[in-house]
Length: 400
Picture (tube, rainbow, N blue to C red):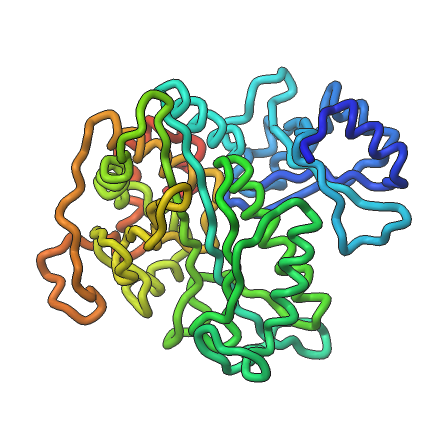
């Protein structure tokens, strides 16, 4: 259900809500929040709640450190793991300066601008997410150990797969929060799991991805486990991917737009890589265990950067396989939209599909993704596309 401001206030008053979490993300997509009492809710909607931006990574220094959070009532959800008596709810927020000017580093604003730009050009995008994570055992203090929760493999079942009850609770929790998981299964690595979402509009999909990570970590901790979303938890095992599924529809015609979207993304993927793979460990994942290394595409082939899954109708889409869970989904989705838009506008035809296994074939003829974090930073700093798509503050945070 999508709430209005008036309905949120009514819900809080009638449903024994005692704490309202105003949530937002730092420049790298890590969720933060401040809790306010119900008596402060109307003030939050009217004039916002101030925060110290100097304490949030990438948000600013000590001189001009005040920012203001304005809750988005359409994102209201109850946190199901909190008590029913004295409920806790959460809303994502828009961030502004005290004078009301939108804050440049607010990822939700960046994505909203991209969605608006696409609509102005006559296109509507939909996104779905596939997020992988490892479950590790914890010690007596609740800290992560190096021991995975199980030794199961791809799509194994219980009793080898010990994570199925954890995934079940995650999926049920997500459903109670209005998020629609499509499927879940054990992945290839020991203790590695994947849960996929039904597609939705870009902003909802990004909000849901951030919520998903929070839910997984919470449910894992309640189960005495640690959920690890890092790109490469084991040097010799598969890394964690954040596969982005994208479809595009025209407001003007029904032609097949995916080829131009693919061309636009392939032509700009090197420039975007630092924002899709922002950690040094990200580059240990790329090129190993089905994670892509080369700027290629193919129908169905999982060794490629972009593949077209075997689906028809509303489910026909492209899957971008290079991002990992350390990405900020708001920035990632915005960049993918801008790149696809450029491909659509310029009718950029992608190169021929590469229908070979790039993990084992001779790949000397194919252009590679940036090989390390410094190469990825350099590509972004030299990119006119990135300069046009993102504010300078984001560039500074990621590249300097």
